[in-house]
Amino acid sequence: MLVVVYDGVRLLDVTGPLEVFAVANEQGGEYRSRLASPDGRDVVANTGTRLGVDLSLSSADARGATLVVPGGPNWLHTISDAGLLDEIRRLSGQSSRTASVCAGAFALAAAGLLDGRRATTHWELAEQLARRFPLVEVDSDAIFVQDGTVITSAGVTSGIDLALALVEKDLGAETARLVAKQMVVFLQRPGGQSQFSVRLSAGQARHELVRKVLDAITSDPAGDHSLDVLASRAGVSTRHLTRLFHEEVGTTPARFVEKVRVEAAQLLLEATADPLDVIARQVGLGSPETLRRAFTRVLNTTPGTYRARFHTTGVTSDPSAAPRRGEPVSPA
Image (cartoon, rainbow, N blue to C red; front, side, top):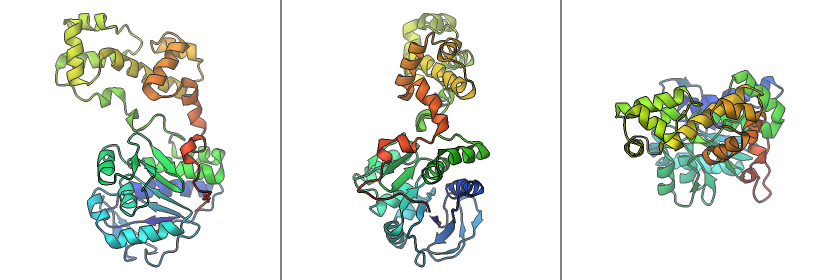
């Protein structure tokens, strides 16, 4: 495992994957991690934390290893460093697979390693990645994307998701499950980057009436939240409430209610073994079929598939994760 580091690198982009591989070693893995910087000197991460470096990039040999390129807040500076990009390009050519975390995708793209490939990065940066590198097919919602032997991941903690997926490929799903359990993280994080709490993602509405309606819905997902009832509680017409929702939340009341109920169902699917009909009633969706349709609309998956995601990282079931042109994917 060869990790590229430089001054200003985001600390968790580096330490998240390293911790996964270290815990995997406790379960029988044999990963050996090395940190390489442009000049072989220690670097200072974005937090001010000093990272000890093992060797310089120019002296590094990545044959048979996994190359990991973390990101950093100042990715514009990173992609303007021609020497750094040259070394990333060289080492990627030697490695068995190349992975990026968060804004590290910009370095891979600038080195030409993502041309014609699917890739992801932090959701806030996805549009900039697509605009600056039009040859890259950017997926702004994925937690991680594997295209051939190149794997990109989303924001910061998604480096943990990516590393768990690599552990599953190398050592099997059971070992990956043990690592995730030890680290108290999801084996496969449900949903995509749009999975953030429904209430939080709605933001802090400016209108007090809308805030009260949002809070009422999220505090009781199974309650009666029909448009007529919501409007009556708020003391406004259904038309006025709908308009306020569009302006403040960017969606309809019914759509928001559905998302809240699906989120509540997600929690029950994760925490219990209750059958789908029980869960559907508990969250206000009534029946397993209504629950299934809501899951499909909101998460583009089914309740059963969602529950099953806690048994695998999903990397082996994703057709896009298959190696291209017969290239092998081997341990670091």
